[in-house]
Length: 334
Image (cartoon, rainbow, N blue to C red; front, side, top):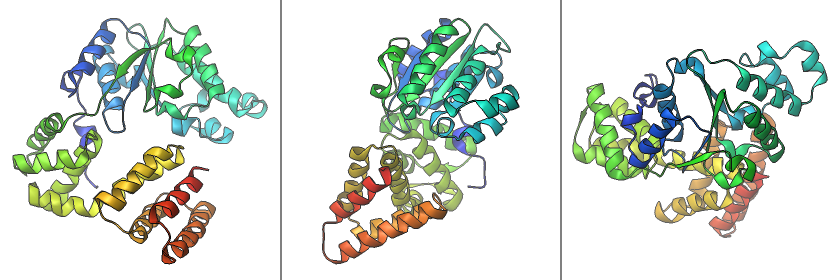
């Protein structure tokens, strides 16, 4: 998409969040800041909800909200952490030379939490995709939370709160963000397309909402893609647009789950493609490799193609599509 993303252009305020229970819980956190674990399925609006909380709670949310994507941050090498412009100012050359990666991660967490807020009495630190935090780093995070609890509010967003260690769970107030209903998603989309001046009909917007199946982020992106390609959001326009991109989105989700070790979710998506969408194993494999070319490179991509060659051979021999593609997903996780 060449245009600004609608998910950014139309980020919700606290009052605009579609789930009433989330609005109520977060309003309480504006008046009495506490550490939070915000959890729910992908695309339900966890990150948007935290940003809406920061907008309501801070006079200068651009500075007093610090976002760390855990999957990126904790997956960085020591060199990448040291050179990242967000962290480089408080990592001197001596610390860079003499510290392990774990030491640098701990140092970044402590320094970030100790910063004085630009406005108001506290900062908010969002740790997004927190299911990726290793246990030893979680222990370090726990100590930082204890030391800086008066000046810093920690918000931990995750799909899997069970992966957080008990000492962190006990220090945070839980906020469940369920997937929005089709009706709630439809209402959000209607507000956006009207604000954008895009022609639409009720059935078209509802079609997009149902297609997204509770993933609000996907619904907004799908509506924008439809509007850009067809000039309107009607049933026919959405169908023509989304039938081409639907399998790629599903494959992206399947690869995300496989890489994170969530094989149950990855295989569930695989079953959806094979059974509900009626795709053959070869078609799923072709889509997987198409998505992989924009996702991997170098040795990683070459290794995936080698594995895919073995799977393709087994599929040609008449072996189970589900078993062979499931084996590929398991290898990706490893």
